[in-house]
Length: 444
Image 1 (cartoon, helix red, strand yellow):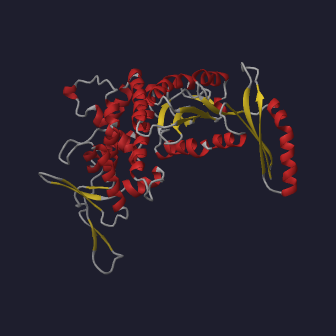
Image 2 (cartoon, one colour; image 1 turned 60 degrees about the vertical axis):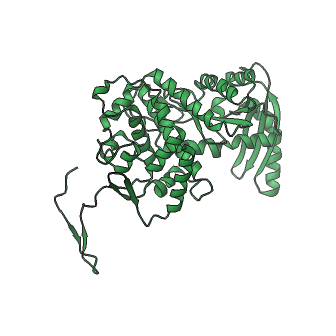
Image 3 (spheres, helix red, strand yellow; image 1 turned 90 degrees about the horizontal axis):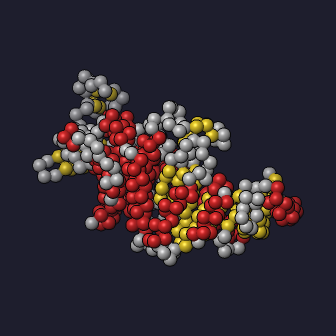
């Protein structure tokens, strides 16, 4: 940046005093809330665990930044709303980010964009495999105290548009764009992101899901032997191999089905009843039934829940295949809950934390980036947990960031202390203090 040579700026509109501006305020940050993110990180042991998964092949004699510091800098930047590596060139001197990465004002600046880019492109497939396992172990460790009686795994695929020369980017007809097609698996009750797997852009929604489940399910059964595990997904995951795998493993599943002529014939009478009731009342009608159905590719009949709905716009039928032992209406309502859990969380992951910013050339590097954004998601989740029973507890990261992370403050360093003197007019002082106390207590 070009250094402004004007020492003082005078504004003429203010009549009560001379209004003068200079750039001599000292060390000031606009992101003091990143200190809470560091405390959440220590509570989860996230960056330390991930750093242990990466083999550092650099010559330590010429490395200014260890792997954990690089991870902290990159992930904290994402949480604070600086998702691009290029942002590091300006933020590497920010006093709050430096303090969160264990550096004093007088210490070396944090890493530049080229250093972080080299990190992203140095990670190998075996490092990513270890990182995936570490995220799963963190999920298990966090839920041991909760000892859940059921674990609902929401599976979903999401689109990640690509615009450059990224490996394995392809055109996807359904989304009508060049893209990657990540697979994500959430715990429906806690919102925790268990894994996020990058896939080529032309892959089907169900591609690789069984392989991922085969790595996850045995660990969950071992950690929570008494818990019922339920697999939930939309019609993109409606393939015979999924049902067969769940049945072999003793898992419950609730998965959407694409309508076809056979299913439409099965629901025809109920749909006519819904139409007749709509004509009589001029109000939306929703009726449920169930039946046994076997597609040509299935090895057996399976229970299918059918919804016959008649709206002002006309008929609307939906189908769900399941082995869940609830009545038809409750099964369907359980299935539709995923819209308020999984899809909302994907929106926060992609739009709030910019998890679709995968612009590296190498596919492996982009999977690593996806894990970095996944780490940021976990830190936000932990911060939100520390805000329980406050007005910020249910806020999405976009609003939470503005209220709790974007706090201005002056930073002073003495021989014994590093002071962050935050804005006196901050309206969230008590909540900030409460979150700090809760995170610190959990860390200790």
